[in-house]
Length: 375
Image 1 (cartoon, helix red, strand yellow):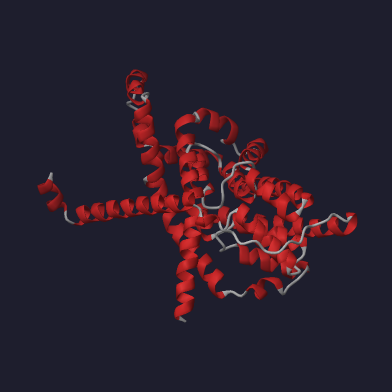
Image 2 (cartoon, one colour):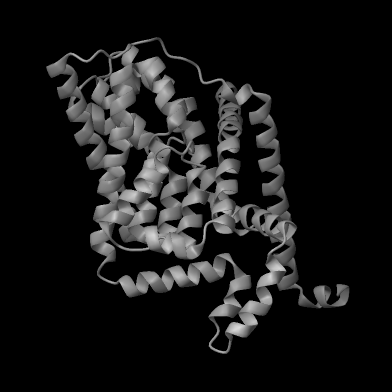
């Protein structure tokens, strides 16, 4: 029992370390989006409940080298900047399922066919998920736009004054020069990315990592590989992939191990699609930002799309004789890199800083007299 607990702690630290770099990258990209991408541009390309916005979001997200943890802040940044629910979901599905880095690793470990079918499947499933959300969201587009407006004000309090009925164009023009300086913009980027945005993510991040570490510690590998082929194998792979906090690149060597142990290529592809796209952190944030209905559609689209593509993959391999590499399982050792260790330390310090600030704010709310005296 003690040995399992030690392994659990080690697995949690390893997963946290491996996720930290990508999460910091996602926070940085979210900050850049807020800083550099004009809100009107996002509204024009990703702000509508239409098919074109969904397709654009899928193709924008697919090549980005962000994993399931890094995509969350980036997607929230898009949503709060004015992106529609369908476009946000499309981006949220396409981005973690594939990327330029995971495609190269797929080619090396799984062969050219899997390297091609994987990004194609990711884009297809992203557009499919966005379309399903689009049919739900189009019933009340005005409400969706109103929520976007509120999210933008919440994400950037400085802009709330511009939405006041008393605000004039003259006042807006007078305030613009104050935010032009590079130092001010960098400061706002840092505060936005590591402040409220990180606070919104960290709860579900910790839950996801703890559950993933528990699965890695106590679920035997035979449980994942005994199903072999068919619908049951794909369903098990999809269900197992939901709580696993794993990025597209990290899932590739694990998939190669499954192939070596006899799992079908289609079931392996289901794992590589469902694993990065679905985890407790992502599901928690979708529920918080877009509601339960969108979350259910998101999960249904991931399940149905990945299993359908899994069947197509098995059929294509059997019919056309595509070769799938069956190499031995490779151990994902990226978390031993100094870059990953430094990133984990930085993220831990940022989390600790936010926790201290939350405790201070809570203390001042409960003891207003103390805060008044200190002032």
